[in-house]
Length: 590
Image 1 (tube, rainbow, N blue to C red):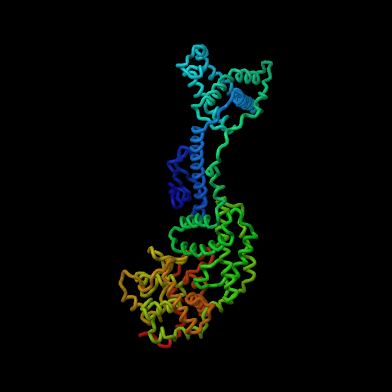
Image 2: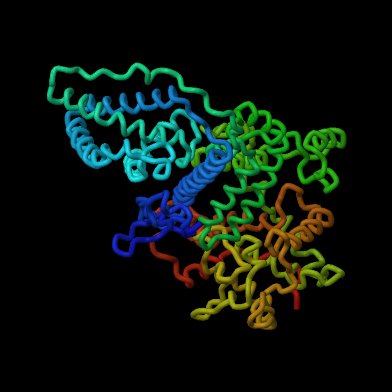
């Protein structure tokens, strides 16, 4: 479409712009070859947030121009195939309307009147040379008895006025038709009368010009034609689309704005897709502009009756059947917290619909308040591992007897990933995607460089890019030796394969979850690998690691703008991370 995929920064002012090259097929109609719209900010992040909504507005504008061009072509075809035909009375009514419209211009201002006098004087001069030749016209010179040069002069002067009159009256008449010629020459014939009327109005010659009463009469009705669907404005068409169709546009917008963070945004959008699909089924494809607060309220209540993590044969059934099965089999249901997250995803898409003019309001705004009130404030204690849990995990056969999956899947990741998560508090995907080149040494300190510098790596946000020193116990256990045995250009855990969602950690997390929940009797409500992240934060508080340092290590954003200034040295981070107590390994792997 000729639209740049990201904001453009002005080289001198530093202000970001939405810079758009107008597509070639509509440049003439649009009147420009390029658009530069200031985003009013020098912040790259703010510019990326604003850019998609501004660019979408122009996209709709371009499509509307294309629609108008298509409609004009359609009408042109209809006019050629089956044109309207005017009788003499119709022509007289249209000419009277032209006359009255010109008189109205006089009433608006004296400047308009003076310019009209000049205009009519020039027209009179152009037409007067043909007055004597009208009577000499022959059939060979013009079919309607007018000399061809005179007719051509009239067309040059009044064809646009004639087309405007016909269009407003609802007629489709090509310029080569006799009815069109009759309107053109009719306008020419009334010019002397108009010149006299305007002169009298300006200079008061004793005659007060009066409008033509015939202009108020009804013309013959135009021919009945099909009103093509494409004549409906694009925006009105889009307002009839379901939430699923709008979500596709929302995804495109978000991905265009996700510069440098595409993988993380893709995962979020994949999570959103399930609730959008559910709502589309629930609303039976209801147009997004017609979704009401009542619809949202009923859907919110429905979510709380759906099964949590249902079997595949259940998810293939309708929402109504899923609810029945959950009730009959007494299955665990979606928690208020999960339902709240899904409602927030739905609200984000509906908010986008408002921003781009597809809906007048977001009916899901505020719909999570009731869920928020019903969610018990679960403390960190219930999301993290207790000391007894940690003893169970680190004294399990994985760490004491070298137990691994029988098919050889995951390799040594089942051993190192839990330890890395315990000692760094990092997200499991950040660890699972590591390359050997991400394990570095500086000033004698071994550390992980968590970043998204390859196509198959991602981070949650800009603050997640960081250096995380390795705890001295990890080094003592042989992690650096393990890494040195892997191909230098390969990944740390090469046996981990990417899932359909683009993540390396999902399958191994599921396997570890089964081991701990079913064989070690670890609580079901703790997310197996994410539980280490909560545990690390608690341990960090217990040993006195300052919150801002803790956030820097785990890649959490504190929300304090002052934390974005400066950085913490690797030496400081290493000293702090070594304060974390050693994992309760009974027998270390040799």
